[in-house]
Image 1 (spheres, rainbow, N blue to C red):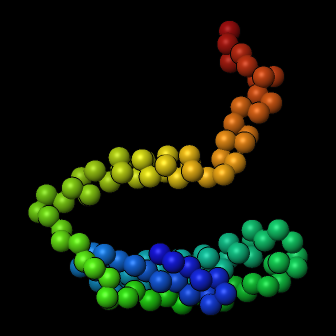
Image 2 (spheres, rainbow, N blue to C red):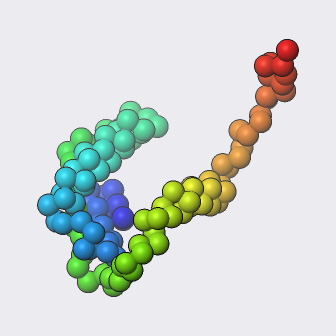
Length: 116
C-alpha cells in the first residue's frame, strides 16, 4: 500500500489479484479510507496541523499492471503467515529509529515488584 496524504489517495499494490475480488477489496479498503484521515486528525501534534486535515475519506485504486505471483497448491504463505508476520514485526521494530529509547528506562524502581 502507498498512501499519498496530500492527494488523499491510497494505491494498493496487489501481487495476487486473484485472492480477493474487487467487491471484497472495496469492503476491506473502506476501513482504511476512513481510518487514515481520522488518524491524521487525531494524531496531529498541534491545532495548526490538525486544521490541515479533514475527515473526508481517501480514495483508492488497485493497479492491474503489477506482476502477479503464481500461487502454489501448497500455499506456503498461508501455512506460515503467523511466523512471517512475527518476523516482519520484529524486523520493523528493530529498524525504527529510537524504537528502544524507552526500553527499561527508569524501570529500576520496579525491579522486584512482583517478587515475594
